[in-house]
Length: 157
Image 1: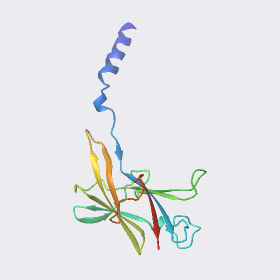
Image 2 (image 1 turned 30 degrees about the horizontal axis):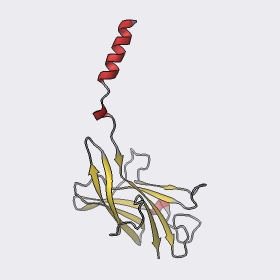
Image 3 (image 1 turned 90 degrees about the vertical axis):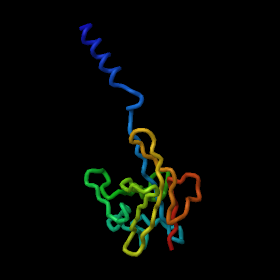
Image 4 (image 1 turned 120 degrees about the vertical axis):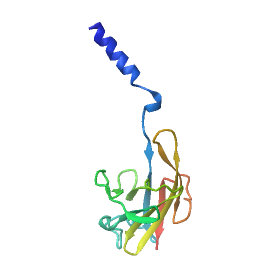
């Protein structure tokens, strides 16, 4: 029994290393869309809303615009919609940004419908290991007005 306990501790402490702990990949931004009247354009009850089944995500990879669908992910179309709840009264579109491009500034296209496509560009900070974290984000060429750049409020005409 003493041998098994010693073996357990030996195995446990030799396989735990602070350097090999985790991989952090944070490539998500959250978007909220409103029309000029302040109505939520992600809400299906709003006239001319952005329909979830028409939204498409494209990444610019090696100069080529590619629609991205990853069947192995929880959100294979690279976005999800979150409904309003007690802490907020609007829908949120959570978008996973381009991680396939080798370019320093990566580009994601968000096609909201056949007439409206927005461009999100970003840079990454890549630290030790496989960690990837968004450094800066531009939405249609502009930096966000608010300090919390992970949530964009977009007003459409």
